[in-house]
Image 1: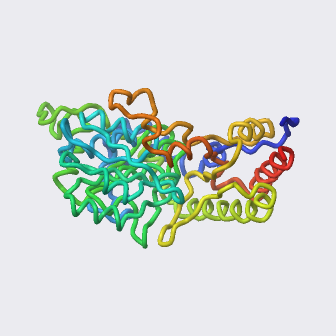
Image 2 (image 1 turned 135 degrees about the horizontal axis):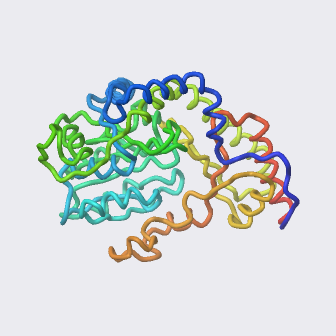
Image 3 (image 1 turned 90 degrees about the vertical axis):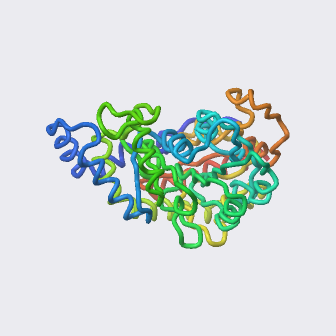
Length: 382
């Protein structure tokens, strides 16, 4: 179906509005950093690491250049490498699998739970072999994995557990923050994340002093002291300007998280009241018992996804898809021999999932407009 575009637009995310809300705090620290001449591994990086450690509940935080760096460095620092297998879910951003491949290990793809879209603990247990040395639970969309079952599996099989928390800062499972269950947690500060920099960034959190020290070395060419390179690393550090901005944003994260949760709850209420009577096959996201979802992405399953996406864009609604292809079907990973049909739940989700606009400053009117567009599409398609 088609319809004329509307003048009021609801972007998928509005980073400019976020900046405007805090520019009086951000601008002075940016100018201070520029005037200081200290642009890498300076006092703001050190302060951010201390503050994040206090907030996240782990002894050591090491900031790095991206969320992908965080995953790769955590794996390398844990001794994962060639000949090892690492479990990962079918639905995740490709960086999860890139990190495994980058250290020379083999990713073993596990299908997902149809209710939460997260790694299925039973299938993870069934996928372990004598070569399995690691597991990466991905807290996809901001919903925490079932960490009691996955932690028990990791302990039973003596696996290195690196939690992929790129989309889930502040999420909790049974009151415990994500990133604190396993060997380490890897976070992303990509601009669209719930805590986003004005560029790339990431961090590794851990209680293991040796792992933290190895990550610190890996991010600066394997060195802690000038001209003393103990490991083969690379440039993978967070710059001082991004650290200063993140310190400002960290102060707003709790309020922004509550705003996200509030808009998500309004979405779910309106979808149940107005949309499900028209299209009962739609599945809004769930929040498992014991989970605190932080809604980095408000993802729901819908019929005729591609046609709906086109219609929403015509209506000025910036919906997206995360992700239209499960990772095991990405051409980049063809060398591992993955095949279609090996993860049917993840493959079905990739065909049906859509992400609605969600950001702290969006407002109730924007939520209403998005839901009304959904209702209009499905009424017109009957």
